[in-house]
Image (tube, rainbow, N blue to C red; front, top):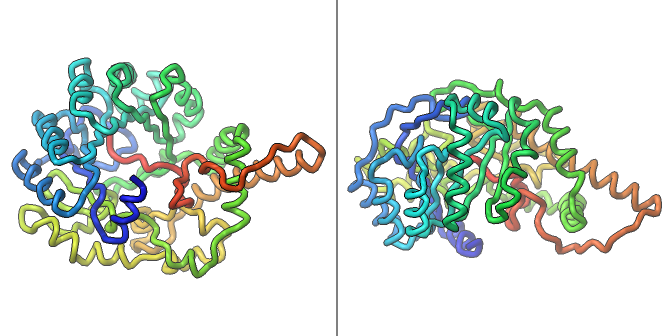
Amino acid sequence: MMRAVDRARRALVPAVVMLTVTHKCQLACAHCYQANHDSEDLSTEELIALMDELVQMGTLDVVFTGGEALLRKDIFTLMAEARKRAFAVTLFSNGGPINAATARKLRELRVMRVEISLHGSHAATHDGFVGRQGSFDRAVRAIELLDDEGVPVLVKSSIVRCNIHEIFELQKLFAARPRVQFVSDPTLFTKDDGTSVMHERATPEMMEQHHAERFSTMSSADLANARTLLSEPPSEAEVDQRHPCGAGRTLAAVQPNGDVLACIHIPTRPLGNLRQTRFSEMWLDSEPVRALRQLTLQKFTECQGCEYRHVCAKCPALSFAESGKLEGHSKQTCETTKAYWGAIKKRLAEDGTRAAQGAEVRTLDRVAPRVPGCDDTTPRRFALRVVGG
């Protein structure tokens, strides 16, 4: 899969297309980037026509999200049409509408993964965060039903002030179900009407403490990989030529009204609308997508000289929200990166001190598995992005 995505990146193929099929949602999550859940949605026929075009463009993965995608009456028709076209299908959901029949249908469709948002290890925390009682129980039940059917599940949690103390407990909630995966992320995005949700963010001090606990049990292999990443950075010239993310290069998003975006978190810069222009025309030649494709780390001038520059999860959407420029400074990105890699650096120093004091030293493989949250081709990613659902 990664080799296919690498080829897509070079050929500017929209390998992953996120279809926000509706903004309608039964929840009111405090951190949600969608300010309004009123929705004028593309029709079944319009979305199927788009899928036909995506086949011709070489798209690999179609993500169905919302709002709550399962609130669309034709959602299974749409997913079935996607599978007929050999797309890998991912569903983002809050779990509320999933019952035994839904889980069985998703298994029959052979979806690649269902990602369920869960923001606390206790009902009071999760339900308070999403604004509806009973949501925690419904989400947990959905995860169990999906896993019982053999559907791959990824549990996603945003790390915020009100739940950071529960993240490790939440991660253990499904320990008896080894196929259920878990990821958490502290990144928050401004709402699409410009409203800030930054007051929900965990503070840098909270994140430093969180990461210190997280990395206290870091394996020898992961320590070795982290040490290599920090102590043997690539040349500045190589880092300069890197692109910050796949937006506009391998990733695209479609809004319920037909607006096409290079990044779902930059809604004010649409490439155009499907009801006026074909997707391929917008993707191949529009100003917003050209701007992202020309963006390299060299243009983030305020980051020059930072020791974590080569491992930073630079996000043009956060930069744009905070500074009005794709290449501008993002305080959130900076704080998140320094808290994460700073904690790893301290952990490496502690490990070195123990070794120097004569503690048992295990052989460290220099070609080690990736650091948690980093992928093999883009080591600066500190966590999987939590989007939608």
